[in-house]
Length: 309
Length: 276
Image (spheres, helix red, strand yellow):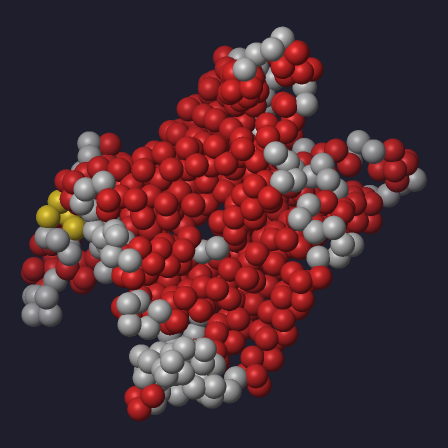
């Protein structure tokens, strides 16, 4: 068990290091950041001064060490688009993304699991087929397009909800549904299949024979036993929502780091891009680590290469 | 599953349509899709008032025929999907076979590599790389392939691990067969069914991924039509001209769903216990 923990943590650290190294070298590949930052009329002197200031005159391994050291202290460099340090800009926008991810997660967990449970209780019925059909649709449709269709219906035609931007609870609804769509479908399908497995078990028959209320049988006995893979999936989906947030925030003009990374990439603001990428990757790695460790605790037989998405 | 017939006829037909459209796209278009004609901007689809059967799905803000652009978009998606899957599939299968067969160090290396790669949200990876190297067709294909190959590698590897313990492998070794021969003639044919299922299920994933990138402006670049790009372009006119955004998306959904259904059906047929 201890070996598993150490190995898993070591893997996570290695991954983080690899990400920083790749990010660093990728951003250095692009060409001269100095030329990007200077106006046309800059003299050779200005150029050299800026180069020294940015530490770009040092050998590459020194630059890398400085990069790591700065990043560890929360300094991601200067955003030349915003003319300000990148880190505070990023931190400012993180809460918006967290709010969105949380909203999507709540939607996915509530609707997805409920739908899965209901489907599993009436297999083959129209409820089951409709739900699974919708889940199939949800996993096949481009979620950003569905988001736009939702905007078209609820904001433009029906005028019920705001079209974009972050505001009160109402503006969270459509983005959450959009971001959570895929996860909801996946959770619904998994919950249904897990519940089907568990509901046919002997102890469920026993619980029913004992005369327990059906709600209790389903929720307390069946769901709890079906639960572990479902919880694992929830954790994994939260991670992939970090990726999905990038597109969703663009659709809804949501002021989070997802939209910021897209804009920064298009404007070649590499300080911001690497800062956000690092943050998201770290969160993703950390999340997966927690999931794997928890899974390892719950099921001691689990091997290292269990995840497969 | 959903269908009781032997073959999922409708999804197969849709997929067939998608492939044919993709291949013969330039011959099938009604109007040149890049032809700008400002005199006929924003014509609605033929079933709506003001529509015109000459432009069945309407026109966009530059007067371009939507249906023709959708047809060409199918071609772009098809080319990218096929190329990506060939690249990722070939590379992933090769590495999976080798890692699974040789085991130990090579296997651990592969696992570390794929774990590390799967530890980053794929879209983010794609965005950063494309942002740095520019969004040309080849860059997009390579980037999407990079995000796709781990699945193949892991699946083939786990199948190989099981297969190499089989009797027929031992017999082949006894008969003096070299490693390469064993892998190619004995193991590979047996991983083929799972590989086919994965490919079929991966096609919609790749198409959707590419459409997301195109939507962000980091995929297929204008003026080449792409479904994702069309959806993005139609955003500004969402209230005025819903068909700009809606119709490409509908086609996308139908194509992806069909491919998914076929993949599910193949998985049920070939190996119901398959985990991917």
